Length: 111
Image 1 (cartoon, rainbow, N blue to C red):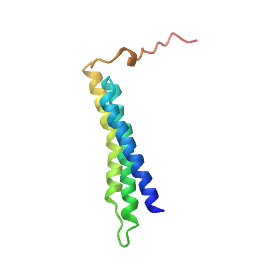
Image 2 (image 1 turned 120 degrees about the vertical axis):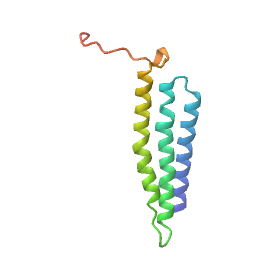
Image 3 (image 1 turned 30 degrees about the horizontal axis):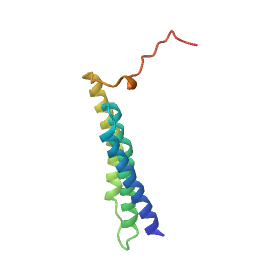
Image 4 (image 1 turned 180 degrees about the horizontal axis):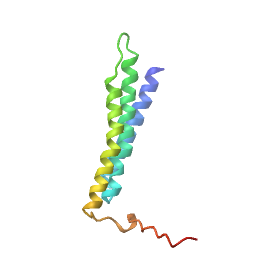
């Protein structure tokens, strides 16, 4: 049963990592490309690390906390780094596609 769970976690992790990598390559805009590595790839690497934790935790006489620390570090730093990259891109006025631009909110346009 453990092998089935580990296999599913590894396949899910590989799928999300692949989708994130394809998104990084295919999406046309920096702001759109930012979602690939920060969301999909983070979930993919997280699933693979959880599979590693399960594998080494069920080994007799050993418990592995290294993967848990890596997972926590990954889930903390990925959103922060994406936020900082997006803020830097806004600050340097990086061009974006017309369809990704957001119109500013107008307070006087209430229905």
